[in-house]
Amino acid sequence: MLAPPDDLEKLFLEAAQSWDLERIYTDIERVNGKPLKPTERACLRGLLCRYRPGQIAFKLTWTSGSLRVELNKGLYRYLEALAEKPLNTLRWECIGDWLEEKGYKLSGTSLNRIDRSTLTSQQGLTDWGDAPEAPVFFGRKEELAQLEQWIVVDRCHLVAIWGMGGIGKTALSVKLVEQIQGKFDYFIWRSLRHVQPIQQILADLLKSLAPQLSTSQFEVSDLIEVLKQHRCLIVLDDFETILRDGELVGLYRPGCEGYAELLERVGGERHQSCLVPISREQPKEIAVLQGADLPVRSFKLSGMQRQEARQLLVARGFTGSENGMEQLVQQYRGNPAALRIVGTTIHELFNGNISEFLKQTALALGDVLRSLLYQQFERLSDLEKDILYWLSIRRRPASLVMLRDDTKSIASGSELLDALESLRWRSLIEKSTEGNEVVFMLEPVVMKYVSKKFIDEVCKEVDAIAQTQSLVKIRLLRSHALVEDLAPDNTRAAQIRLILKPVKDRLGIALAQAGMTEEAFNEVLTTLQTRFSQDSMYLEANLALLGLLL
Ligand SMILES: Nc1ncnc2c1ncn2[C@@H]1O[C@H](COP(=O)(O)OP(=O)(O)OP(=O)(O)O)[C@@H](O)[C@H]1O
Ligand SMILES: [Mg+2]
Image 1: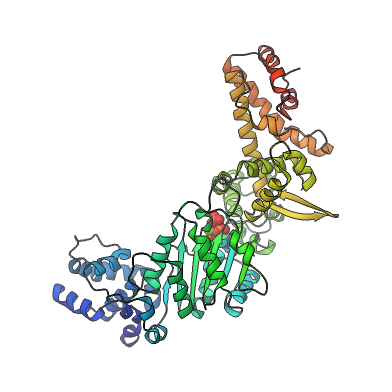
Image 2: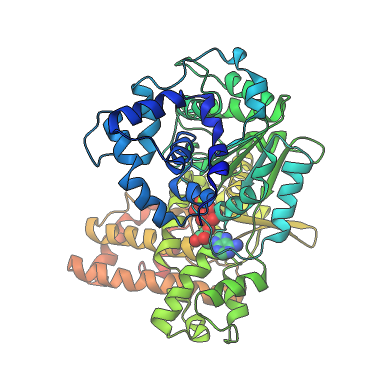
């Protein structure tokens, strides 16, 4: 149903703040020979405020399909004519740029001269950017309540939401914003997925928040000024993309160092707004600034609760009474991305039989989750990777003393502590206490991925040994044990079955491909033996386990 014209005229009036609307209306009438209808005027204002067509349709109580037809028939074509662009080339995102080129944007004033009274009395700006929709969403009531409390009631300035890939950060934040955006004058969502230098994001945000500001060099101070004047909610998703790969957590990519200043100042200075970075890793500044009595908070998102995760599986075609559902949820720690992917696999390959699937854990990781974890893993420093490999070999919680022993040839004690902290911030490992001892372990989904990665990498080394008959390029076989000497029996049995066996199989294939018998190969290795005995902790033992050097 169409909203009555009276209401239509009141919609998106804030566009008048930045645009000479009357002149646009008159010129469109002149170029096209007829005036815009009230609906078209409302749509034009909405588009100039950067609402998406679907959101405008919602406000007009139209279906988005019928609104799109209407826009394609009329407004879009008129705007092409007005902007003197070829027919059928308009994308709604460009409308602002086109009309700005044509001089319809009101001329800028400096930020300090923004007329506060008009701005604050205007209807607020809502700009979802490229935020996804979350049409199917279960549970998370406590998480939403906690975040709402921090942002709306406690009026925090900086609230980071972080957690491992696929755990549901973006979906939760979309729900959160839907719930609380009415409490803010302005709301903007941006993803940093395509690595944006700070200048670019500041320009983008300020273009919307303070269109009157006329400068080409935006500074964090300009944004802070707006955050003081208006109650703004700004969400920056995929924050980890501006952090550097291959380093300990928290360092920024070149050109993105300014984000540290952004977080520090938004967290530390007086204003009335809230910035919400969403990240797979906890930004370092937040870890430093956060506190229960401070306006900076950090929310680590964990998996979904059992009941809610079950609902998610039911929505993916399970009845909820299947055997093994509890175990499945447990195994994937309520990670919604993992459960969705695994749900599909179980339907496609196991005819929906969860217990059957659970017996064959090798198939447990679907492509999507693997690629999520791949991205996360590739970002790590060598030491972080080495620690994860050790934890995957151990298959049980490891104390600091054990890890120190494992990594003593590659890292000092303090380097190890830094790397462990970094891995925790990246939500790849969990810390808990056993007796009086602090222990570290892998998240189960991560465990699967890292175990496979370790075997793949060791197999590559085995290939290289067979092809080059040298040990020059060997690293993991030197630094990690395939099977631990002192592990409990059941762990050793698992290590033999899950690590040693596949590597050994691979060695057989590699030798066959290289046209060598094991005996001939052993002779080559024996001549090398004197050279590798000093520099490697585990190489000799590993080669012996593989049936070599006997
Ligand atoms: N509470 C929920 N109910 C139903 N589905 C959910 C829920 N939370 C997340 N999902 C779904 O799980 C998938 C992963 O969620 P999301 O993209 O929010 O994860 P993320 O933590 O942002 O991941 P990334 O680190 O890759 O950005 C999505 O398909 C999302 O729709
Ligand atoms: Mg996300």
